[in-house]
Length: 160
Image (tube, rainbow, N blue to C red; front, side, top):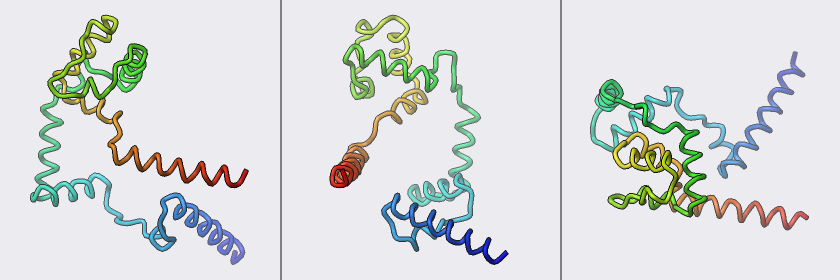
């Protein structure tokens, strides 16, 4: 029994060390898993702090938006539709940034009719535009990813 606990402790320590390396933090920070509160509540508390409101008010607003939402409609894009649209746009050399630019809709005539209607729908549907926006990493996230890749690749090259 003592051997089993010792073995589990070693496995935990190895997992913790890997987590710390992956996140680029100390093992003590990796050990701190944070709050035991539900993720939605932690998010609501963060939004409340930013907005100067109570977490309850934020959650009530979220619930009201969901209750009054017409999303998804028959014209809304699914994540699979969005992936196909992005492929079609790439084939026509149209960027997501062009589609997302406010007041600058992409001319529908450059894409086939089903995708042209999807682009038309995107100009007026906030939930679909939000879904599309998730495909656009911020400049900071792009730089962070490029830095990560450079470090990993330089290590891989050094070890080969």
